[in-house]
Length: 110
Image 1 (tube, rainbow, N blue to C red):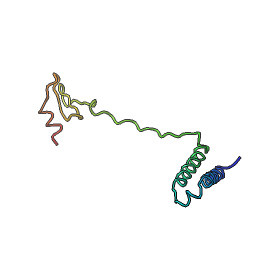
Image 2 (image 1 turned 60 degrees about the vertical axis):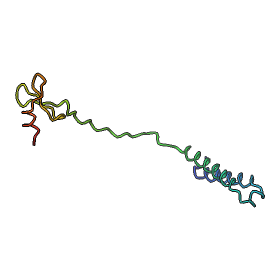
Image 3 (image 1 turned 135 degrees about the vertical axis):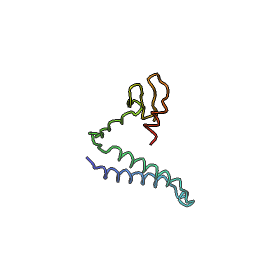
Image 4 (image 1 turned 120 degrees about the horizontal axis):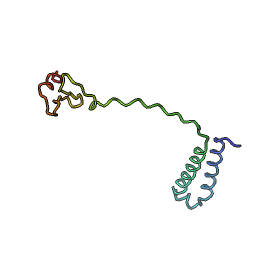
């Protein structure tokens, strides 16, 4: 079996021969760039096909994801009974849900 490098060289040589043979002397005398473009496309496609047919590793390694950071909105604490403070909001509330400006200032006004 041929190696990948040998396949690439053979395909590139074949593409060159096909393009060079298809160009007429009239096209060469007018400095037509069409043949060069077509040859480049054929050679590029051949090289790309040869590269993509190479053996790829079958084992895929995936890094472990780090644990998500804790949600500050759910981490509340109580500086005194009947008062809840929420670090995500930087605010404290009474047990009935009313905003407590006094405890908010004491805890977060630093």
